[in-house]
Amino acid sequence: MKICVVSDYLPGFHKLWSGAELLAVTLGEMLQERSCEILFLTTPWDFEPDNNHDNVYAVKTPAKRLGMLSRNFPIDIAALWHLYRKLKSYKPDVVHINAKYLFLPTLIVCSKLNIPTVFTVPDYFLFCPTTFIRKPEGAPCTLYHGAHCCDCLPTLSNGTARKILARIPKCFSKAVLTLRAKQFDYFLKKVGAYIALSKLSKERLVGYGIPQEKISITYHYRLAKPRETKVSISKPSVVFVGWLSEENGTDILVKAFALVAREIPYAKLYLVGTGRDSFIEQLKEQIVTDNITDNVVFLGKRDNEEALSIISKCDVVVVPHQWPKEFGPVILLEAMAMGKPVITSGIGAVEEFVKHGRNGFIVDDFRSPAAFAKSIQQILDSPGTALQMGERARESADDLLGISCTEKLLTLYTSLLGEKKH
Image (cartoon, rainbow, N blue to C red; front, top):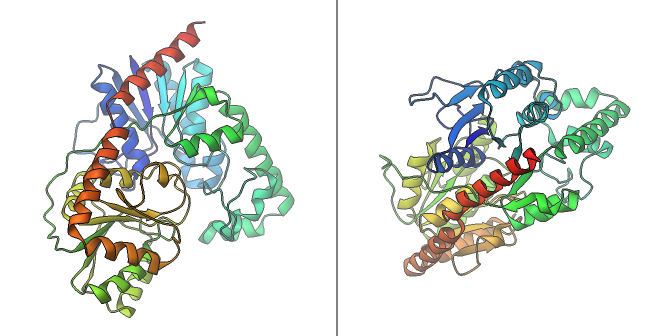
C-alpha cells in the first residue's frame, strides 16, 4: 500500500517542530514496518538534512509568508500545483494529512484526483481561526467559527498582524470570516476519515457536526529510543519540555519552582525548548527576582532522542499548559512511557491519561504557582512514591501506545479504498 503522509514540518528538516510532527514521523515509520511505501510531503526545508531523504518531498509554498491569510484560504497556487503534480505522478492509495498549512491544498488536490484522505486532528483550526477555541478574556468559546471571530483575532494576534487587523473595517472582517467558515465546512465533507487523539476531541468534532462514524480514536505514536545526553542532571530535579510560552504555562512553572526552592534549596528545574526572545527574557528576569538563578537551567532546543534521555534522568515532568490540550500532549505520554510521574493542568483531556494520585498529579487550579509547587514538592519529598507512580505511568502509556494502532490504521485505509472502488 502506498501512503502519503503530509506534515507542515519534520524533525531533521525544519527548525521548529512539536508533538504533531513527531506523530507524523512515527506514523510513517510504523506503516513502513508493515511493508507500506511512504512518501512524506512537507513545506520547504530550513536546512539540508543529514539523513537519507529520498521519501521526503518539499512542496513549494511561496504564499506561506502571508501567514494567517494563506493558512485559512487556499490562495497558495504554487502549493496546489506542486501537490497536484506530485500526487498525480506518485498515485498513492491514501493520503494521511497531519498538517494545518498544507491541509486545504492537499484536500483540494486529493478531491480532484479522487484519492481517499485521512486527517489526524492536531488542534481546532478546523473551526477556530486562532485554534484555541477561547475568548480574549480566557473563557471557552462554544460558538465555533464565523463572523463573530472578528472580536478575537486582533486581541489574540501579535505584532504586525494585530496592527493590520485593527485597521480593517469590521464588516469586511466579518465577511471574510464567514467565508472561511463556509469553505472549511465544504472541504471537511471531503475528508474520508478523522483520527482523534482523545475522547474529548472526538466529542468536540461530533459537536461541530462531523459524522461520528467518520471519527476514530487512535494514538499513532510510539516512544523513540533515547540517545544519551551530555547534559549533567542533578537531583532532585524537575523537567519541562516544549515551547516556552504563556500557552504552555512556563512562567507559572518558574514561579512555582521559586516556592519549591525555598523548601528544597538544591532542587533543579531544567527547561528544554525555546520560545520568543521577549518571553524568555521575562522568564530570566523573574528567575533573578526570585533568586533562583542557580536552580533553573535553560537547555535550549534538543532533538527528541536527547530530550527523552534528559527526561529519564529527572524525577518528575511538569506539563502546566494553560489552554485546553484535548489531544494528549505528546510530552505527557512520552514522560509516562519513560516511567516518570507527571504533573499537569486540569484542563482538556488530561484525565483520560493521568489518574490523579496514581500515575501523576492533576492541578485543577492550574493558574496557581502555589498549587503546582505543592504537587512538585510532594513528589520530590518522596522518591519512593515517585518511583511507584512512574511505574504505573509506564503501564498506562503501554496500554495506550500498543502495536494495535497500526492494524487499526491499515484497516481504516483498506475500508476507504473499498469505498473508492464503489
